[in-house]
Image 1 (tube, rainbow, N blue to C red):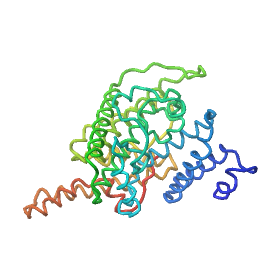
Image 2: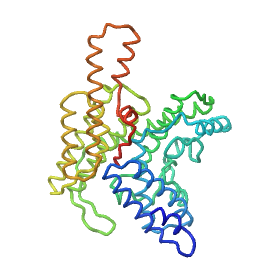
Image 3: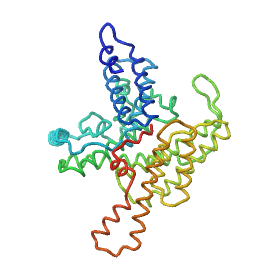
Image 4: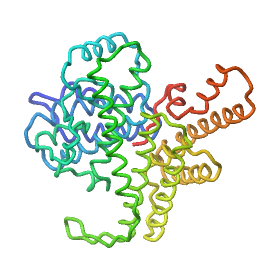
Length: 386
């Protein structure tokens, strides 16, 4: 693959762009199923470079190329949502970001998948109702622009709207920047700080509005796709239920990564995810379909569950998913969830009988806030759930 990318990307002997991209996706899938995070991340970065080099070199992409770009975006954004291994102490990164913070006198924009500070995008709360132009929609592979794109294909491929992926991307980027500022001595300008707070509040409002939109569980009637073929009521119910689970889990992700709230506050949203996943399973049983779905919402919710019933139910759901899928994420996610529960339960027991000094009480309180982010950082591994 590396030889193809090096020798067949340009020139008279170049390979077909879509063939190269599909080959990379095959390697990503193989590395992900085997739990090889290092290779999977390298291939994802190779895919990004290829998309930027060849996929964006023309003003108009074919439908097949756009489908492949959407697959890359899904893998990258969902993958980045559980990647927390950035080296915030890297000297070159600190110098670059400090220059950005000092040089940008106007409104800074939170950009890209990682902790990139300088990127073009919109900043107004009203822009979310506007539409991207075709060129922006094609090039916005990390969904940094909050505006809608009418030609999106995520509903066709994954059954989820682009807006959900966009909010996951924004949540991850803002959380990474907050983590960076928390763990380094860099002092952002007041203008940057105000912009960050404004964007965080805007994103919180948008995610809550999206959650309210999908909280209703009304009856769905069969619909038809673009080819006129009937979609079964069971499939429509399953799709709606999984979307409810994803939106509720997104809300949990926001309050865990950005607000860092006590898990007690999140229990209603954990129950919402469980309710949605129950409806998802029921709809599949009614239609005779056996599909484990994505482990992402169950992991995000399960890591916050405080009592035995929701923990047991989500663990069983993960175990059933692992039994019906070769995807390594179902199994690894269970291990992370168990470690979070163990640490929090120990902290809770220590708190009940803690008569020690105030500094020891603070340390115990911090252990009670222990999350999946801490597990992944301490274990130095990436949980791949895309």
